[in-house]
Length: 600
Image (tube, rainbow, N blue to C red):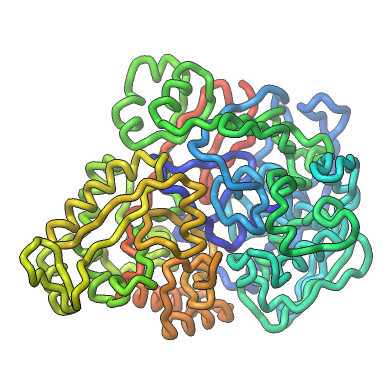
C-alpha cells in the first residue's frame, strides 16, 4: 500500500486539532518563501551519487552502510538508542488501509508508516527528491519518459493472507509491483477517482527486467515528476495471488483492505476495533542497512474520541504524543503539572484549511450571490478568537498563505450581515410571509449542515453558524454524523452542506478537488462545483513548467474561486503538539513535524 503524499490532497476530519503521525511526512507544502525553482533546476537536484561508508549502528547490528544516496539520511542519528515504543491518540478510526480507494487522512497517515516509494522529498527542502527504493533514474529531455533502476533486495513485510491463509515471507519488490500499482489505479472498475486524475495521461509502464522499468507519459505534464517518483509498489502477491485481478473485488475486499503490506519501516501488528492500532518494526525494512531505520520498535495509536480524555492520558503518561486543542494549549499547558510531566510542546502553521462546502446539486447554492452572502454571514475573526484562541489564520483560498502560489491581493470577505442581506435580496430571497425565514418561489431557505460527531471544534462552531445564518433569515439545522457515515454521504452527494478540511500539497495541482470532471461519485469535487473557466486554467497549470507562469495561473485560479465562493473558507489552524520529554530528535521542518525519535 502507499500514501501518495506527493501530489494529492487528503480529506481530513475537522477535529479539535490537527493530527500528525510520525516517521514519514503526511504532506509537503511550500511553507517558506523560497525562490522560484524551474523544473530544469529540480531535475539537476534529484539524482544522487552513491557514496557509502561503514559505521557502527545504534541498532545493535554489526555494521550499517551510511549511504549518502538514500533519502534524509542526515536526519537520523547513527548513535540513537533503539527500542521502546511511542503511544499516540487518534479520535476516529480509518475506514480501511487501502489508500488507493480511501482518500482519508488517518488512513493515509497510518498506512504511510508501512510503505516506501521510489523516492522521498527532502524534509528541509521539499523541492528535492532523494532515492528510496529507486537507486537511480533518468528523465528524457522531453520529460515524457522516466527510466527507473531499483535497488536489489528490497522486501515487503511478511504477511499472512487473511483470505487464503497463505504466509508470504521475504517477497522482494520488483518492477512488476510498480506496474501493477499503475494498472490498478487505471483500472476502470477501481474506485479511485482522486488518483485517476493524476495518472490519466500516463501511457504505459514498460518492464525492462525485475529491477528496471520505464514510465511513458503521453504528453509533458508538470506533475509527472512527482507522480512517477512518488510511485510505491503494490504487492501483486497479496492482491492478485492467483495472477488475476478484479477491480470490483478489490474495492470490496474488506479483509485485505484492513491490512497494509509495504516495504516501509513498520508493519501493522494488530487492529483492535475501537481500541487501538499497533505497528511493529518491519524486520525486512531495507532502510535499516542504510542507516534510516527509525529507532522505535513499536508505535501504538489509542482510539480516544474525547479531547479531555486524551489530555488526561497524556498527563498520566499513558500516551506520549498528542495534538492539543487550542483551549488545552492556552489553558492547560501552563499548569504546574504539565511542566512536571516533562512534556515538550510545538506550535506551527499546518498546510490544512477548513471550510464549509455547499452541495451545488441543491438549488439553494447554485447562485454565486447566495454563496457570497453565506460567506459574509460567517464571522471568521470571531471563530479564530473564540474557538481557536487566535491559534489559526483566516483562510481566503485553497492556496496556503505562506506559499508563493497564494495571491496576496485577495482579501477575505468581511463579516457583513448587511452585504449578505443585500446579495440575498438581489438573488430573489425575501421573507414574504413574515415567519422570519427567507423564501423564493415557494421554497424556504432551509438546509441541513452535517457535523462530525467526534469534533469538539464543530460542537462549538455549529451553534455559532446557526445563529449567524438565522439573523439573516436562513434556517440551518444540524445533523450529527459518525465519521464513517460522513464519508459515505460525501461520496454519494447525499447532503446539503458539510464542514471539513483538506490538507494541501507542496506543489499544488487543483485538478483533484476543483476540476468539474471530479464531480463523479467518489471524486473529490463532492460539492459538484463546475466552471469551464476554472477547468481551463487548471489544465493549463498542469502543462506549464515555467515557475513564474505557474504562479500567475495559480493567482488567476484563486481569483475565480474567491469570486464564486464554492466553499466558505474558514481557517488554517496551527498544529499544537505535546510530546513526552523522554524522546529526542523531534524536529519541525517545512513539511511539518517529522519524527525519527529515540529515548534519551
